Image 1 (tube, rainbow, N blue to C red):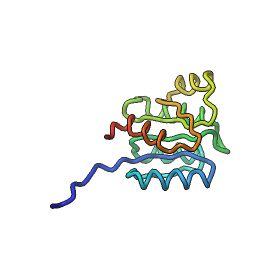
Image 2: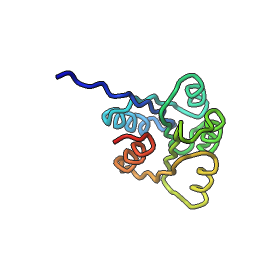
Image 3: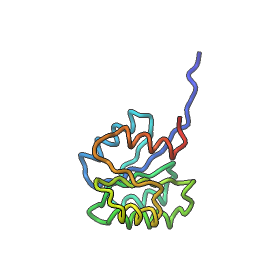
Image 4: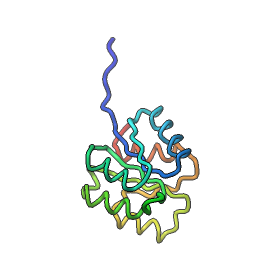
Length: 130
């Protein structure tokens, strides 16, 4: 019996930390995602202008741009939260910071402490995967 082709889920990962970016990219690929990694905010915005993604993961601040600015500018490029979910990964998750990110256009603030399953579950939820 022929294997059924699944729709490829394209994810843009924005993370200025090389080691974490490589680790997350690898784990996402093993989980079935097609991942493109951006080294910072300007790189991510350029990629987002020229390619269509199913979702975006922004991990904290990059050297060239704070995460809140990345989310705000990406939301200007793609205002519809349903068509392009943006998840912000932070390590603290203070109420003011969470509210700020949501108001800027993030669909979800994920407190990421290394538990990949939490991130994977949230991503699947927003990308409507089973």
